[in-house]
Amino acid sequence: MKKALVLVVLALTFNAAAQDYKGHYGIGLALGEPSGFSIKKFNNNNEAFQYTLGYSAVSGQEGINIGADYLRHNYEIITAEKGRIPFYYGGGIHLKSYNDAGNQLYARVPLGVAYEAADFPFDVFFEFAPGIAVLPSPSLVTNFAIGARFYFDVRKAVEKIDEAI
Image (cartoon, rainbow, N blue to C red; front, side):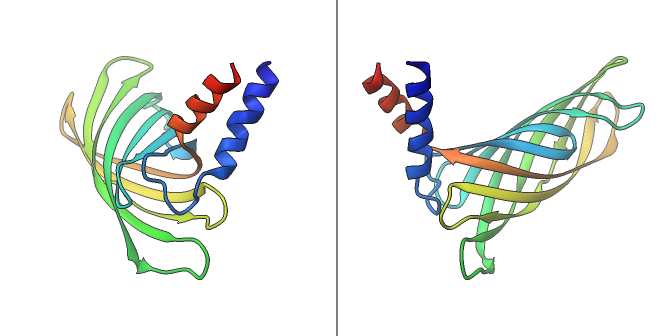
């Protein structure tokens, strides 16, 4: 039964329209500062929320990082014959909990570029995000990442699982 549910969910993800992520969730991994999980939820074709849960491994600043960003996508700057290449930008807030002691709260401005595959609900991205820490004291922060996400429609997946049960 569990195998059947997994197969149904996987089949749904392959049926998702690769070019229309509206209402879909992208789940993947990012490597960089911080490295960890990346979740992206498109509200419409140009706006999305991005959530991250990662680990910062910079010497002396190791710790867990959690954050949320609001992103706008521009598909007109870079074009591709197949797929799409949006430039994206936005603003966000992140909290870093140091292993040794203390927390850091900072605002950041993510700037990135992604490649959205034409025939598969998948993207790869590079992101640079300068920021300013406001707690415990003002300081500059730099985040960067390269990663990939797989997109699926949660509502369709839940419906199919309900039907299978």
